[in-house]
Image: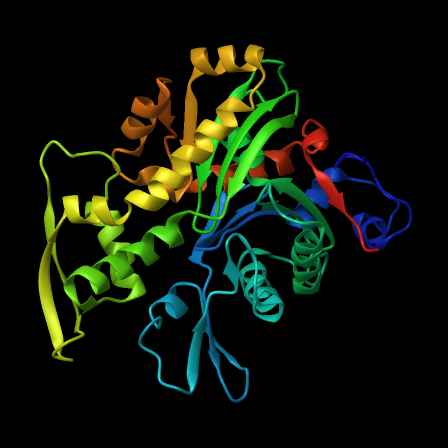
Length: 366
């Protein structure tokens, strides 16, 4: 694989790098605006080479039904979820970590790229995109095609747990093992990493979105109260927990009484929310156990010394680290900024493509 310092034969890149025949890499960096993307089910984060994470927006697009016109992308579109008239549809184009709506994903990526890439008239960006470790070849091709159609010059794929491990600073190139659990919106990725590769991994499509769904169903089934997706997410973030709290908390939620058919306010507790999310949390813990069972003994001893690193939005659920510690008898550490680890990892790869070439899958057109 060519490193980022290698000048390709007469292509658009070389012509633009210097009409006077000079291959000045500082100009190359200036013109290219290469970016790393954490294309998540819930949020999309973009890292610009030489800068940092410059965009963090919900993966939501608002579309006019009749014309197909894009009305809003990101935060503005998420505000419309559950509040749109029949003429407007708020779409989440990714489901379970993969593309569910190709056209909308492409248009969303195009919008995000235009926001962050300068000098678009000079050179298209090279893009590193994270994908779930359990993704199929067809799904990989969909990600690649969406990025290329949205304006990428060249596309590289990196598995999410690998990107997260690089983002938190784990020595992925060493023979010693590191275990990382990345709980996003659509998938939970559990991986043991050594020598620039994933030695064992378990990818399940149970994560943050599933927690929101079970909260909605819990209050619908037990209290005849119908709440929206955004309310469920707020409940999860504010008082959700995977382990009993020292002091249980409460909050008021608003929804519709399914019997009376009128709006209703109800006070709920953190213990109720913990009960609501217990099943998907148990599924994640079972996946962690499975991953540990598949880990070679020598690497398992490394994990015993180093512990398990938690990343992703799901890592922010209070008490999840304590619950995992109780279930596995292993040290569990929550990353300092779990939401940005994957995006930071794609950025670190961009900054030194030669060093991380072995963890990348270069994607080409067939």
